[in-house]
Length: 471
Ligand SMILES: *Cc1c(COP(=O)(O)O)cnc(C)c1O
Image (cartoon, rainbow, N blue to C red):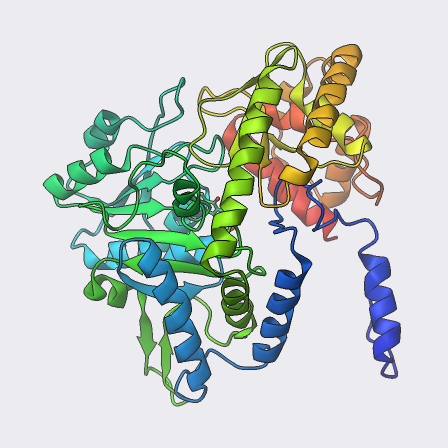
């Protein structure tokens, strides 16, 4: 786009936005099983949009200039603290920022010059990102390959004098299982190490599932030894994107997440988050969503999600060749297959208008499909099962994605930095992947290539892919 010479009418702009969004996945209706969280209640999303809009131009940079922010943030963070065992919080832009702040606080609270962090292989990459940005070394620990939960003994063995933080998930995203929080936190307390619970996806879900009758293990700040917890409101809080909370047991630890600077001749900087100038829109959106749903709204959504997840697990288990991985403690469901190519299955589902999220094999966990069950899923759960069954059958008939002999080794051996974007796009085209087309891509080949590569090569290819789509 180039800047238009003359300003355009709002109507004109809205029409263009509608056109730009034509190829997007739908954010409502339950046919997209990741990225979006739908209550199935339009009036709630309407309230959120209005709240967001009202706060849009308020700048969270300076809370003394806009006291509305302080009051709203106290209410939102307070509600999360009430649900998750207390603590002192910060409203952030998302799980990644909450995690960044938890890792920063842990790093700055410790005396070591060579900080390390113990992270289960199923933990979210936001910890790797925080480690990368903040100069902390990740010590990865495996999970049990039946339950997908981290082994407390493996965590204990990984702790050293330089460990500044131990991470557990409630639940971990890939298989939706809760790590043994109580046992790991007890080890941390004994060893004098901080323990962060990543409840980004589960913090505003598990308590409602528990109220709806699910068995949910203790996972929050009420557990001795847990020192911080992250909880995204833009997931099962159903708030518009840009909303998460990180809670610290101790206000002194929260202060380690803050940043202040007086080292320039401009306005003084006090930041609770990574961002400085930022819209209070997401705060207004989260506040409005929580107020519009209320406790009984969340319990009801929890009940519906739980019911949908149960039917989905049973239904998938009954489809020939498919099996649910582990026993999810949440409403995240992953399934794999030793008989059909799950990446082909996902492509087949896409043809039927459904997005199912592929997950690559990693650390002994097979390739699989992830489904995030939300409040809107129940209404269409039988249709979803029908699509999965049909797609599995079609994938069985088509057989697995095939790659030219030697392709994986060729890519693994490439020095990607030596290729320019155009050459990379040509390489992709040679295996049938058109990076320049807007059309719905067949992803099975791409996923098969990625799945065949080690993680560092996957990352190099993904970065290059991003660079090409923005070229
Ligand atoms: C989504 C998620 C994150 C990261 O959150 P973003 O909001 O995407 O930055 C971290 N941990 C878990 C378990 C998640 O599900």
